[in-house]
Length: 111
Length: 119
Image 1 (tube, rainbow over the protein chains, first blue to last red):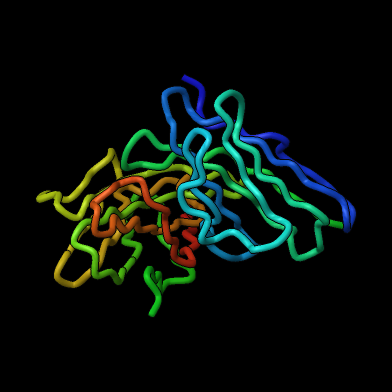
Image 2: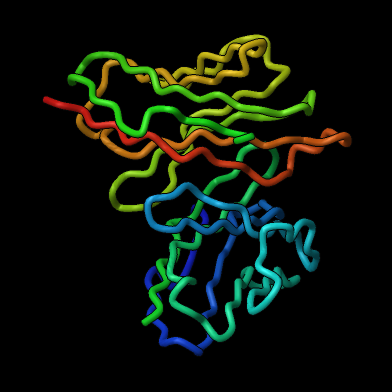
């Protein structure tokens, strides 16, 4: 049973470009969460999705960030017009119930 | 107030000894869950142990146990027989279930404790 998969593992973008981060949950998990980890900090919640629905986006910045979890395919976290402050590790987690299992993360570097 | 507080930025332990990592939490929800994750230098987040607020007994998973003291709102992680591979950052996290009691909510993380195991 494969774990949570994220790709790419590393992503480099120049300021103003778009970043797309993908997350495939564990088999049988229908709940997906995105978190961001800035250097030397703990993880901060961004958004919680179920298939085709955003359940809680209270941690998402109001502009430039969006997330989706379509009926088919992975969950996508999209960052438009990236800025240097977006450089961070972005983690996806999935859950059947209770416990969230994390993917390996995508390390975004904005030049 | 911080929802999750880890007061130890760094801890050192000798190999084969036990170590306790502190975590206190703050919530008014009657139903919640407490988690510990390990983040080695490679960066991934590894689930270690879970304790539900209604669980009567302390959770245990191999060498990991969670010392859950509900009245004190603490959820300390105890690692027995430390190994060199235990050197990592450790995060305590909480899920608050709200009035509906759902267990699918977001996690709030502490700032982490860096554990170093000496040979």
